[in-house]
Length: 487
Image 1 (spheres, rainbow, N blue to C red):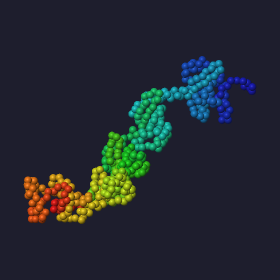
Image 2: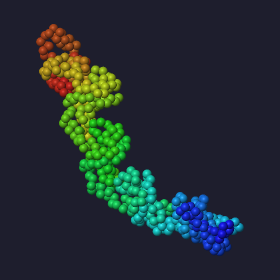
Image 3: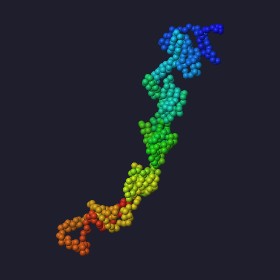
Image 4: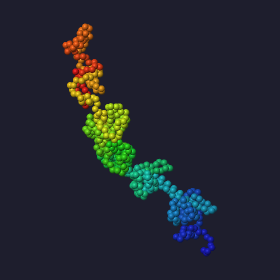
């Protein structure tokens, strides 16, 4: 060759200084255009050698010089494109113009087809229940994608471990080799999906729960989640129990679990119930402190007087704290004996210290009935305090039923009196009905004059409305009861 000669050459590549490396020998080999036309028509895979990087892609020697766009090379960046120079690749002709000797080839389509074919073979080999090895390819908030031999499988965060995993990145890393069990293979051809699980290769901790956790036992664990209705406590990896808000305090009504416990806090609790079939364990926090109602009947027997602050007011009554975790209720009707109270707030306010009498105790229902008016002396209390059995008093007969009569001794003061009706008295009444007028007149005259006939007269029959003399036979201050007899 001499300067000025024109000759065909092929580009082999570039040297470190950036000069193109050219070759005459490769151009001189004959080109088989008919073979290339058949390969183009049949979409056959052909072999070629990457000869250099050019603008927009690379040049490929497939018997003639062909162009392969960077987007169809199957690589991601320019650095990887450079590494293809000198390599023999499989490709497919996607454009062929014999006249202009314009050939465009595609390597990516071959790689995609090979990948699809490999996945189909892998899908055909797998079945649910198989144990597979894989490599963590990527991590998300909801799980990890694992390469299990040419196909990707989803390892959901809930299937990583029996214990709670907040984020897959907390326990896995990209590139990590793992073993898992195939849980599900999608049957849809267009959306082939595989789900795998790691925890399924380990024993299920719930299988031993029935023998490990018994109602009444004390346990300890860390609070994992706090909801409005309660808090979840991890007793061991994969085993959680729920403390409902109603089981958090004896002393007060807990509105939200976050008022009592926080995530990450270690707490002691008592197992209340275990339901293995439902995967549920109910726990109690307040039970670790002892039940304040256990000795309520002994501490606050009916009739005793208590003192405590008002904790709550409702339309029907007021709640009073007797001790930590123990409240009693004063019904609105037991607030005052002097006047009718429509609402407790007419007399009381929250925080006010009050005295009341224990009226009834129901340990099973955890109810204490209290009364304030019972501590205020009434006219009946004063009457009983001022008299004693044997005293003769005056009263009015209100009504008589059989041998028992009700007597009014004063305003609001009532007593009971036993009336004995004698047969002789009845006979005398009959005789009196038959007596003539003259005999009756003589008798009345004798009584009026205070004659001896008065002393021999029979007792007057008891009738409603009469004012009579009575003798007190019994006074019961506790029961507020007075018993009488005719004097």
